[in-house]
Image 1 (tube, one colour):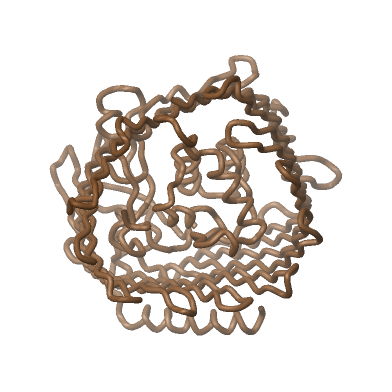
Image 2 (image 1 turned 135 degrees about the horizontal axis):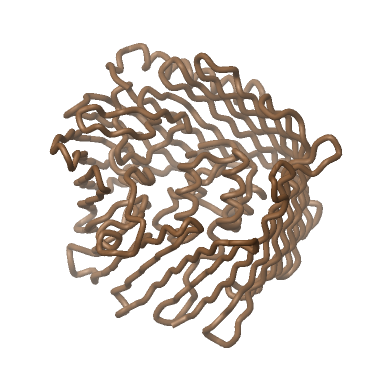
Length: 553
């Protein structure tokens, strides 16, 4: 498996992109996603919802991160980390900052399948502890029919009563004597190259609201739904896929193929894809065809990747995405740049872009969707510099614009210092500015000091911050967590987040106490009690209880 709005491009966008990269270079040396700068740590769906309610993440990011929490991430899908705000895909754990380690550990640490056995079942049920409190559940199962055949199924019900299948798949691996090495049927994630033609876009169509045949045929899934084949022969490896998704009004059919030939340190890749969106009532359809070339490789200085994509069909467009990592000596720099022409139609793209989405309509098929790549250009940089063995400097920044009416500039400067083998301090300053034509500029400034401690299977973290926002004024925040984690099936945690303290009052607080304990060798159970306090709400407190059962088969 692979490791993973209308008008022409013209010379204007190319010029802007070149100037943008130059300015960003000056920013790095002069001031030294979803691609956002963020300091959020989100350990469960409850914290994701809390962050969504408080405007810390966008709805599409919430849906994608919920998928990661429920279904997890394997080693062939490191690109999915790009969807964690503030965390581009880390190639090495030693290169992650203290905050990045917390973000990864919180989001995907508890979703690895148990070691050994033929499979696992994990079931969570949550209940609101209020009058007429509602309930919801999550169920995820994996089972190895043979050493080379594995099935997976996940399903859920929301507090609203909406119940459906989230994903189901059958994965078959073949031995090295076959050209076809792997086949996946059902739900799967995929990204070809840097994702301009085929990538993880997230949910585009709606889904069934109940457990029925339609939910099994077309689950509530943000990836692809169909069949994928991976093939290898004599240094040439390829992947082909076919995907079909639909809701009550539209269908989306995708075909894709990728071929990579290894030439020493350089890996040239050719990518072809077609996407057809149709209106089920009128029968009208639009189709776009993508052809992309990707050059990637590794050298003594680090790694690089360049992808150029041409789109034809209903709309003609172009896109270019660049990613580089330099990791020699004490310095580590990751630099990404992207530019999409105004007609670029990202029905299945998963390449880099800032969250500058806007609802637009594809008139021939009467389809509205959040479109963020069309007309967007930008750059992202993440730098780390080691000062001796105990101190590290961090500088993250992003600047992006969409056509001429929307832009964002974001930056984060931090210092990390390890006091001893178990104690560490981090201080950081974050700045975000979002500008949309005809609206006031939205500015977000935050300064934080964080302390971390770890000894054996105990870990503690505390962070205090001061925020100034143009929309909601000034406020303080405080996060405290204490965790004892022996393994994924034995874990205790206290989490308390005073998200907003202003004028001597606690405006918003969320906290929980949870534990997971093995009953016997293959069965573990857990309880989580949480509460949300909102000073502006009629019912200030919203308590909830979650029960969890994990079984290793």
